[in-house]
Image (cartoon, rainbow over all chains, first blue to last red; front, side, top):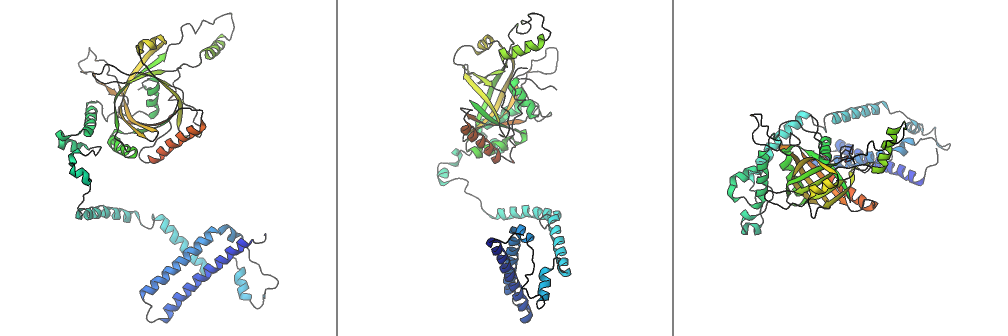
Length: 224
Length: 237
């Protein structure tokens, strides 16, 4: 393999630093648990676990970003390396397979990950249905406790809200207000009126867009 | 003038909702199109164009003939007379509309076609069409609403066919009634941008991008699609 560029070495150095931070924080958690009786206060446990999860996330992000480089690297001892004195370290460095207990961790993690994906973001379908059934009613209950307002500006209220042009109206308010109908409502009402006069409303099967376009440009009625 | 187009279909149940949405997007009240009448005209083949070239006894006379015809006449196109008609209003402003066969879309993603609208300023449009050797083939009416959003025009409409004649030999029926082209009452949403000079790549791209932007905005509300080129074919076949 080609010699490493300074940038590659920097990446390796970063990896080392992040791993060192992670082991440090893990070690300090371990140490606290061992030394403080009966157990360290929950607040310090919480902050430690937060630090660890941050470290883990940064290691994982770093490994993912530089995955192509890191997976293409090979470790080998230089002739000057004191192989006899440092044999255990050398063995560990040159080992390509995971240690058996590490393999177990990987398997556990993979299974946990699969379960998360399967369960739709960690929640089962039933759970989500329950949540939504509850949420609709709960949100409504909360909304009822508030007094809603502010539909009109102060100017509009002064000028009388009947004259405010609000745009479209729904059918019900058209019926209720009947006579008060302003001009804006009028066209819609008229439109709806036309609608009702039209026969075959809503019945029959629909034409394809192509058939309609064909008629629009050439006036050929689609064949039944 | 070039016209860039996208089409979408909306079931009648969603009509009011769509009016609201379009009103919000374009920040304007819908402009009603109460009744826009379209008269479709088809050119009559020049009499004698078929068969008049039978000179000599060439065996491939038919092939020869159609080739000459194509060269001499080019394609013939449908045209329309369009006007907004209102009850009790005598003067109608008719416009003669020409629509070319849409260009091959390639990567553009929108329908693009050459259009020409010529206002009829005086005279009888029907007589004029007759003099052009065009004959009337059908009539329909468009009603709906128009919105303008930046340079794009959005028209939500549906097509009504003229009432069919009341059958005198039948007890069923009654008053003649207009009917919808699409029995289920589907509305068409037509989004268009017009470009003065279709040969200017820059302005065309701008127009296309605006239309595609609109398509993106309306994503999930109504799917705007390119119109089928052959369905929009205005050539006489």
